Structure formats: C-alpha cells, structure tokens
Length: 257
Image (tube, rainbow, N blue to C red; front, side, top):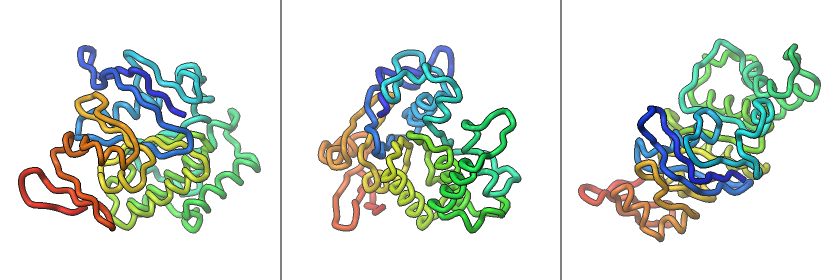
C-alpha cells in the first residue's frame, strides 16, 4: 500500500506545485493519476519515487516512510519509469538485466537466480525474441515493453510509471495497458500518470483526480464518473456507452475517445 499523507512539494524555492495532497493507492491495484496539464501529477509521482524531496507531509510504502529505506532497499521495493529517458546502445537482454542491479554485489555479476529473473521478465513481457537486438533498433512501443521488462526483473512490489503510453500508436497503447493489468494480477501495486481519460476509466482500479496541485477527487472509475468531478475539472461532458465513453466539449463539437 502507498500512502500519500498531506504532501507538499515543488521545484523552485518559493513555489509549491503540490499542496496538502492525501490519498491511498491500495496494494495489488492500479491507481491512476489524472488531471489537466501542470496540475502536479508528475511531481507527485517523482516525490513518491524519491526523485524529489518533500517540503511537507509524508509518503509511506508498506507502513514505512520512504525516507526510512536505504537506497538499495528502496530499489528492491519500488521501480520508477520516467516519461522521458535515453535510448542507450545496449541489447535488450542487457537492459533488462539492469533491473537486477539492486540485488548484485560490487562485481555486478549476475548469478543464476538473476539470469532466471531476466529470462522470466522477458518472456512475460514478450520481448524474449528481441534479446540480442540493439535497443535503438526497436520501435517506441517495443522499447516501452523492454523497459517494463526491466522493471519486472527488478522484482519490486511497487511500480511507478509516468505517461507510459506517450508516443505509442493505439495498438501498442492497448498492449502496454494489458501488460500492466497482467502485472497487477501478479500482485504488483501500480501508481501511474495517464493522459488518456478513456484508458484511465477502463484500466484503473482507482483514480486520483488532481487540479491546481491539489486533490480534486478520488475513487473508483464509476465513482469518479458519477460524481461529475471529471467533467468539472476538464470542462467536458462525459457520456457512457456500451463500448466506451463519449467526451463532449462543453462548448463545441463532440468527440469520441
């Protein structure tokens, strides 16, 4: 379980992006952060992943403040995949093996158990056929799968992801989200930022809605829809349909997503 308790955080000395944000991401579920651009979603995710210090409040995982974990222990507890990352000149197998680094000694030599974890992660994510390929030769969707495989090889209970579907075509978006559902079924607790509202409503167990650095609402997708908070924050009208949702601008032409 991830507990966000009255968190305040920011980047500039005199400016807070997050202001007194509190919610819980239950164990073994997918919790999705949504909200308009600049509302603090990525800031909150980075704070939870210990990439940004807190200015107030506390974040706990499994009942312990995240600052109470050593660097190695935290790396064995939580994996973080940022939205933007470099594409190194490395094979798929080598990158996935990076996920085992928190468990290795100074020699960074993979043991039999580490190699087995790498193989299993590649098989689960479907990247095993590309094991010897250069990461740079893969498409954006394929690379995303490899990074997920690396996080899976890290064997953490918690996975933080920032906009993992960015730059992916629709087919690869669905493939990635189905993969995250599979990881949830394997007991992973997932907290991630998602831009696409339809995807968030379909794949999330819980949704955290943010606006202006504050919590605007939280609950199941059904609760968020029924409350009307989604429409109020985004300035839209949402309509449920058997095969998805209609999102109609409050002023202008209707659009379906």
